[in-house]
Image (cartoon, rainbow, N blue to C red):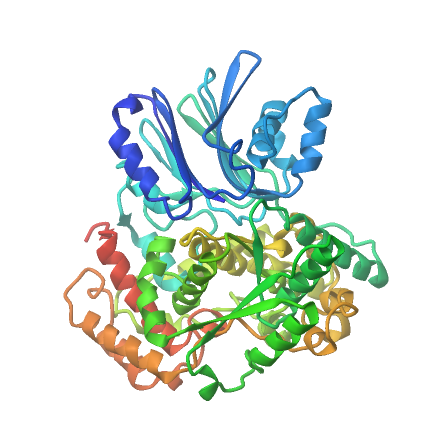
Length: 612
C-alpha cells in the first residue's frame, strides 16, 4: 500500500515547482514511509510514497514502461489479488516482467487493454497512468472503493491524491467549505455523499469509476455498479458458493513478502478469516498466526447489555484464539489517550469523522505496526449479508430514510436557529438519489425490492464510511489492512441473493453462518452480532464534556454556527438522546467528540466558510 498524488497544469513547467511537489509528497509520508519518488514531464508530475509489501527491488515507483513508441508511467496504491492470472495472460501475449510486483502487472494490463483494464483487475486499488507522448492521464479506483482517489479540476489542469491534504498543498484548491459542504458535515457526517470531498471543488472518484484527463477535458465512466440479476442457485448451492468465494478471497489476500497478522473480535466475520487463514498456513507448514484485539481500560466495569451490543467480546476472543491456535495479543487503550487521538484522527481523514471509533482504530493500528506491516480484517460482511438490526426490523426496514440516522433532530439541536435551514431537505435528496439509482427486477417482490434498496444504502453510504475509516486510520501508521469480504465477486453474489436464503434461519448473516459452521465453534457461529467495541467508561464522557465547554467559550466561525444551549443539554442529560447521531455507536459522548473534531478541523486546516 502506498500514497499517490499528481498534477497536470497545461500552462506551468512543473520542473520549476519542486518545492510544491515535495510538500505534496510529504503529506503522504505516513501512507508510504519506506520510499518516495517523483516523475516530471514538463506540465505533468506524478508523486509516489511507498509502503513496501511485495518485491522491494522491482516495485519502485513511479514505474515506467516503454512500448510501441509510447512511454507509460504509473503511480499505484493497492493490492491486486489476481496478479498471477493476469501475469500469465500478459505473458501469453508477449509481455515480459522484471519482477513479481503487482504494480508492473497493472501497468502492463493498461498498456494491453487501455481504459478497459479496470475490468480485468481484482483487488483494492487507486492508480494513475500517464501516457507521455499522448499527454493522456488515466485515473482509476477499485470497484468497491476500498482505496481513496480525490481530485480537483482547476482552470488549466487537474490535481489528484490519495488524501485531501495532498491537494491542499498544491495551491490549486483552498480549504473552503460552502453550504453544501456544511450540510455534509452537520447532517450526513461522518458519512459523505459518494463522490464528495466536502471541501469546495474537491471530489472523489466513485467506487468502480475511472476518469481520463486529456486535452484539458475530464471524462468519467463507471465500469462497475450493482446490477440486478436473477438468482439461480438453490439454498444448498448458495451455501457452497458463499463458502468458496469467502475462502478464495481470504487465501488470495494472504500473499505478502512481509509477515501478516489478523484482527480478531470474537465475532463471526473476523473469526472466519482467522480460522481460514490458520488452516491455510497449517496446510502449507507455516508458523502459527498472530491475532490482535482491542479493549478499553476498565471497560468491563461499565459494560451494559443492549440490543446493539448484547455480549462482551473477551470470552469469544479467547475461544476463537484457542480454536485457531493463534498467538493472541490484546491492545488496551486508556480513555484520555482515546480522547487525545481524536486530533490525529482528523489529520488522518482530513475531515471530522467517526470520532472514538476512528481514534481507537488509529491507536490499535499504531500498536500493531510496531511488529507487522499487513493485517486482515472482517469489515463489510454486515452491509452485504444483512448484519444490522435495521435489516430485520420491518418497521425500520420500510421507513423512508437512512436507517442509521432516522431523525435529524439531534443534529438540528446543536445548531443555532436559522442555520442551514435546508439541511433536512439535503439529506432527503441524497437518500432519494440512492433509492432512484438502485437497479431492480420487474419480478422483485416488495420485500426483495426494498432489500435491494437497503443493500444500496448500506453499500454506498454506511460501508463507504467504514472503509474510509479503515484506510485512513491504518495507513496513518503505515499499516496495510486488507478486507476479504470486499471482493467484488462476493458483492455481486450477495446483491442478488434472495432474503430468505441470505437470512438463513431468520438470522443476521445466516447464510454466512451456515457456510462456515463446520470450521468454527458453535458459540462463535451462532453468536448474536456485536459491533466494534467502544468505551463504556463514564470518564470518557467527562473528558469530552470538559473540552467541549472550552470550545463553546471561543469566538470562531464554528461557534457562530453552534447552539451553546443545545450542546449543554446533551452534556447535562446524555441519556436524553432518543436516537443516535450515526448508527449505534454515536451517542452523547461521541456527539461531543464530533464537536471536538470539528473545532480542531476548522483550526488546523484553516477552514473558511464561503460568504462568511
